[in-house]
Amino acid sequence: MTGSSQPPLLVAIAGPTGVGKTGVAIELAGLLRKRGEDPVAINCDSIQVYEGLSILSGAPGPMERAELEHRLTGFVPVDEEFSAGRYARRAREEIDGLLAEGRRPLVVGGTGLYQRAALSEMDLRPPVPPETRAEVDAEIERDGLEAVYARLPESTRASVHGNDRLRVARATELLRMGEDPAPDHEGGGELWTAQLRHPGVIFGITESDEVLRTRIEARVEEMAAHGADQEARLAAAAGASRTARAAIGFEEFQRGDLETVVRKHLRYGKRQMTWLRRTGGVTVIERSGRDDAEVAAALLEAVDRAEGALHEPREDG
Image (cartoon, rainbow, N blue to C red; front, side, top):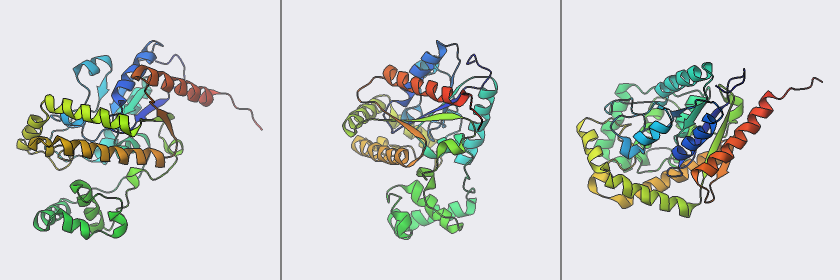
């Protein structure tokens, strides 16, 4: 509880891969508990939802989960397709329930579409009919990814990388359904605070390119040492779905190609940074060499200011 009759402000923590979002969330939770609160982390990473992909997704480990309760991690069988629509229903239920209990949700993760789905009343795209998905998959297998990518409109190709099978397939499916494949889920520029389902503060943690590269290289080495290759093989043998196979490094770890894994993480991080810059209502927090505890303290100061402004009495007229 927050010690107030008002429900606590929701807090969301976004940022590029490798920037240390989970560590900051754990430190922030510790500061909140000193005030008598009992916060809960809600995952908004599209790969961490899968069971059996904890190494590839960088999901919180047992020690991290002991320090902060995490929900919506490892609950989807690896052979299931999973969508933002399904995630939105689960995340909103969790958030609504926590706020009703007076507990503060910390929505943590780097998948922009999932974060928007959890926090706002965004208009999600309709599900792809199975026959359309099968048709596009067969086309990619028959003609090759490069050929299918080349058939996309130029405006779509400008925002979809030609080697990203999942996004090429998704754009092709949307076009077949008569939908606009423009990637509004990667940003869109809408003002978050005007669309949030509950009052909240959204933070984007950033770091310099050089430091991020160093962190990502170390992270990929650690993932390899902890058996990312075996995890990917087991998931593949279990019939990993297309959305599960979207995990960065799923194929490359099996081949021992760590250089490509690093390169893909860096490219994904740049997309996440673009999303942060384009999305209104995000409070950007520069790490600038600060540790998790220092960043968490900066977040808490900003939360306090936002809560003070929200609950401040307004004068009429």
